[in-house]
Image 1 (cartoon, one colour):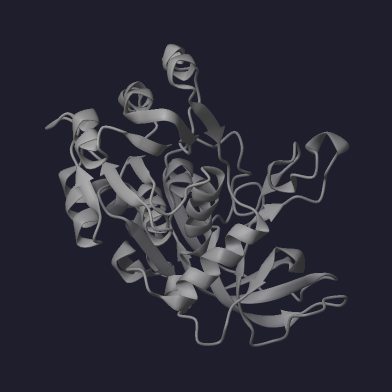
Image 2 (cartoon, helix red, strand yellow):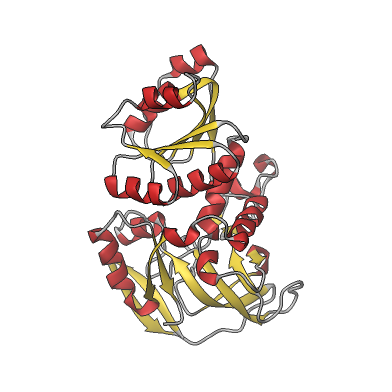
Amino acid sequence: MKATVYEGNKTFSVVEREMVQPAQGEVRIKVAYVGVCGTDVHIYHGMMDKRVQIPVTIGHEMSGVIDAVGEGVDGFSVGDKIVVRPLDDRKVKPSDKGFNHICEELKFIGIDSPGAMQQYWNVPAFTLHKLKQETDLKLAALVEPLSVAVHDVRMGELKAGETAVVLGGGPIGLLVALVAKEKGAQVIISEVNETRITKAKELGLDAVNPTKLDLVEYVKSKTEDRRADVVFEVAGVQPALDIMTEVAGIRGRIVMVAIHGQKKPVDLFKFFWKELRLIGARVYEREDYDKAIELVTENKLPFHEMITDVQPLTEIQKVFEKIDENPDGLKVLMDCQL
């Protein structure tokens, strides 16, 4: 079989490997598609060289079909369409309080251990979620990032009829916006990249550029001055942190989706003055995966529009180089059988 290997220094290679029988409690997956996510790009840029074990096969946004089943695996059969929830949460402690998805010793499959950018992949069966046979495997490769969005919206306790402002119109921001809209909320995206604003509008979303208008006044005009009930900070930049407390209304909820690696200034006075809530949201839980699978299977939202390109696995080096050249794209999928 073919597998890709990140070798450091912005370099991927394609190698031949022998297929391995699944161990006890594992299945072997014939991988269909793998999405390239922002974390994969960070790995390519060498930003995670201290974490990943070079050389390594990466990738965690995937879909596929079970090819072989190891001993002790129940509920799954050869031919089942599946996706993997790439969290190895087996080392739990009482201090984790039952929240295994963010347990202290959580390992992320595809980053901390070998991932899906290969033709066949052996994984523990507890990571699997079964798909219906009619599910489109291309769309199913979006389940992992869509689960992030589902989790974010659930943590924000967003309700139908409320107003959500999404700060950042990249892939996760757009998915958050689509999930929020599906909930029945009024959704406004704030994004400075005109290409992404155009894409958001093509998806049927209200998107504006905060450098070209007053975002707070725009939101007030859409809400009878009430401002936003929920703000999703997805951009990860200081201007978003500055505006999030301004655009949130009284007792608004701010969901921190973006990863901030360093301490940043935040206007805490606004939290006091308007009784705001700040909510952290990280990865997803089983119920978020189930909801994402339901949304993909129903296919009522414009998920196909999220897929920018599909390329053969053997072109992985060119794919990452092209992403560097065109960072405005949304989701590139690798066809792992080509």
